[in-house]
Image (cartoon, rainbow, N blue to C red):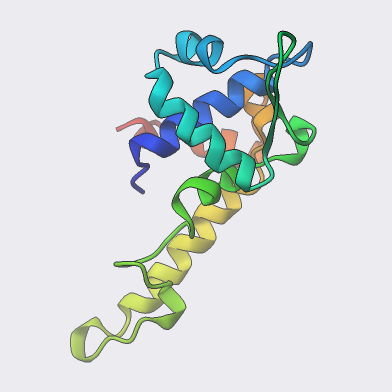
Length: 149
């Protein structure tokens, strides 16, 4: 799996918002906390707002907040808001790919890959990551030493 820099920044910003339930955070605060360029982060937050994941409030008490409870926002939600579909090949969803000859079985592998990603990314919420309390299925994967290499 490849996460773009934009998606990495979006995840980190969303996690900061999930960890700050007392009020909105400004773009500058988010950028400073995660060492993200402010101008770049503003565009990412705008994408998250268009996807309905964050809200913005103007004024001296303004800033960015999550649009929903952090338990209701999965990592997959954030990734899709920035990058679109979880798994695709040159912009094509795996179920729409057609291979021939020795590669005919590749489509099934790519569909399975997407299913495996979904099993993790759709079940881990922002709140889970902030609390460092991952679902049992994810913890089990992390217990395998080969997962870290």
